[in-house]
Image (cartoon, rainbow, N blue to C red; front, side):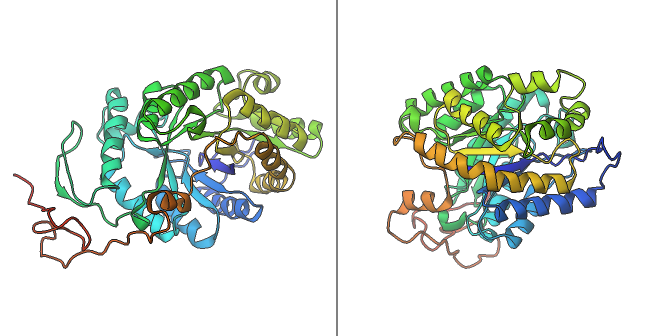
Length: 395
């Protein structure tokens, strides 16, 4: 079981101090949060993608590349990579390069996001968002697995004889999660490819995500990737922890009440009672998180949102200490003891390499000499199929 934290990169006024951090302060803070997550023994740090105020994470690969250089062990992921408004060719290139720089400590979560204006900003039509998500990933999947791709779809110019560079590390693509809060077609796509399905598990009652996860598991088995128990599921969650439960409620209440996403709505008490939000002592957070397995079955990744709603960096770092020292060690033991032997192991680059190559050395692609245009001629790599030929695109 992998445990970690994720950030949506919001820049929100602190309702207690009245201060709003600058973009520079929040960017520095999220780097410190990622580093601290590794220090306290977490497995994953993930960052969202947004292209509008009040968010700062418009270039997750740049941010994660910097964090990769300052950490050694933690897996770096996205909490959303916008598969609808990013060109799948650029996703293939950027995340493969990041994967090399991080020595395999990279995966990504694909999603459509929740900001409608982003579509025209990047030349797309929100009415086509689902079709874009499906088609763009279908292309991305091939770009990472085929040295030469010929492709034609609805939403971008055709590709003829195209090679995405660099090839993925060890010729094994980063693991992909498909994230959704409401769309069965995305769960279907995750199941079709044998990829992971990540349920946001933040704003909704458990019954909502139970339906999506159950459907994903059924379709995962239908497509022959294993049993329903072997499907690869990730969950989000929120927590605010203090040594004493009453302190946690007192400290978090002003942030909850003024939070842009759920403030001025249901009370904190109602929200905790009806959603995955956990507020209280370490033991209370442990007990609520353990109920996720009861609701959804064995799963592979648990990420907590802890740096939102204007919480200051000092408070977030304290939350990480409490998670790392008092919550996650117990959760590891409890989930391990409860785990069905049939359940899948969490995804990692090492496991993916082992699954593809066994004990053989992994492929290390080596290009053939530059041919001027570097498109026409024979196979692009020394170990590509010699029968593979590449031709100029038709005009």
